[in-house]
Image 1 (cartoon, rainbow, N blue to C red):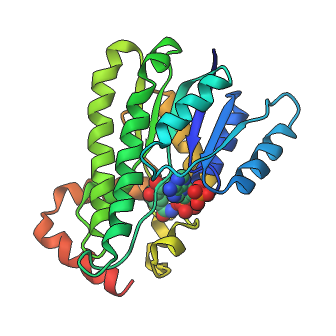
Image 2: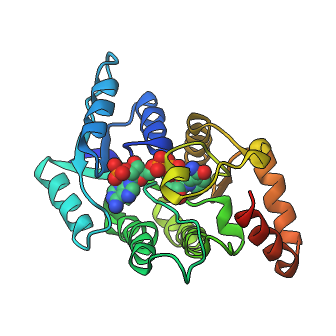
Length: 258
Ligand SMILES: NC(=O)c1ccc[n+]([C@@H]2O[C@H](COP(=O)([O-])OP(=O)(O)OC[C@H]3O[C@@H](n4cnc5c(N)ncnc54)[C@H](OP(=O)(O)O)[C@@H]3O)[C@@H](O)[C@H]2O)c1
């Protein structure tokens, strides 16, 4: 079976940039998202560079319960098996949890948590065989509760906690696991989440290509957690020192009036 790097959410934003970074470093790709036209356009772009193999494209909704089984079947039928899994697909929803649509919030858990967990575990044998690993995209939101975006923040806290523990569990098998924690990144994420544009966070903001490169470098070095950018590293360190009783009202105010 041919080893590949499987990247979810590759049709936009950080995922598309991760695909470009992995391709640039010689990895053969499988691109997953719902919008097939976008994935095909990215596969065309990658394939147009001499010497880079054409990525395979899987148009799959990862919110569906059978999504990972379908991915596994597609890979097997093409003679492919994961060396690296990049769990990047995810979305947020801004607003009070009690007011937001409940099914949409549960759908967020299906994607940000359920699919990520299943994909992190489904291919461990082939990841170990190829001494590869799992790169999970969390967020600086993972380091604190987020009133005004409660389920999203909690979902990213799960991604961070799960990935850190899996890092330890799979280390003896030669499988690296990294949680990438970006701060604000201008992508389709903000519009999808219904967030207002927040100019006060300019200092924390990094472009998606930079975040992807930082994530790739940290993963290849076998880091457990990669916080993207110095300003975000400082923010996370300060957050860890500050009691939640002080931080939560600030986050709440900020979510209401960014
Ligand atoms: N942007 C930020 O400020 C920021 C900060 C920290 C962390 N993050 C995290 O970074 C990751 C990528 O976000 P982004 O900023 O690049 O957002 P984005 O531009 O909105 O991209 C999200 C990607 O996820 C895919 N996706 C969404 N729902 C899916 C589903 N049901 N099945 C399969 N794919 C699905 C989308 O593809 P389709 O719509 O084609 O399916 C798209 O490729 C997310 O996990 C996000 O939480 C983002």
